[in-house]
Length: 211
Image (cartoon, rainbow, N blue to C red; front, side):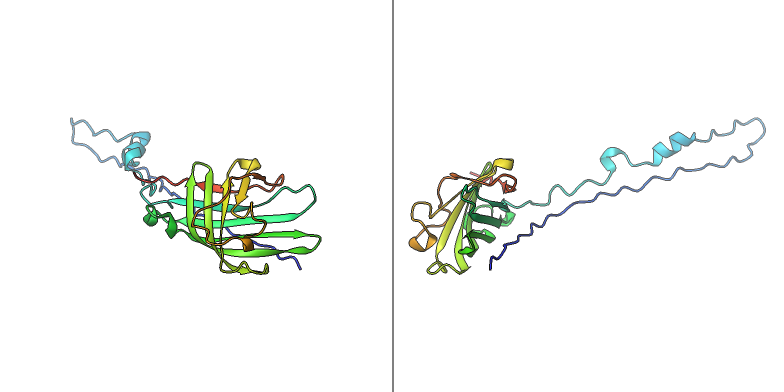
């Protein structure tokens, strides 16, 4: 039975709230004879005087470190014969690990089915390198129904082009991941595959190392 791989990409939103400044009211007190009564502040002046100035208003937490690199999303590959080939990614490199792409974490998965036959694999990420809109991710296969694949390292390349994303994989020249041995981390092929129309939603966060 075909199993579908689902991926949930978590995000966060920063909500900024600003309190409305209340206008001050001034009461008129009787003034001594001959003395000029103090002029009460006009309503619009009172509101302005108590409202926070733009530079005094609460600022967003821009100093919160963002992740150093990421690859997320799911897409199917184009096949004129109707093969169902799916790749899903949830790979991240934390800001604190910016100097070491081999500290990346997360998972990715891929599957290939045709006429009910095929296989799938789940992978634990062990390296992530991104540059611009291109990402290379690798990992160790932790679960698969394809014989000889579990425990092997595989790599995938993604080019984030909006609705026309592209993808490549380390076993492009060998036929299956089972026929590969000794693949180094963060190694894959050029992104020669096209994603199926309407399915490309890969997102790459570019790595910006400090040289």
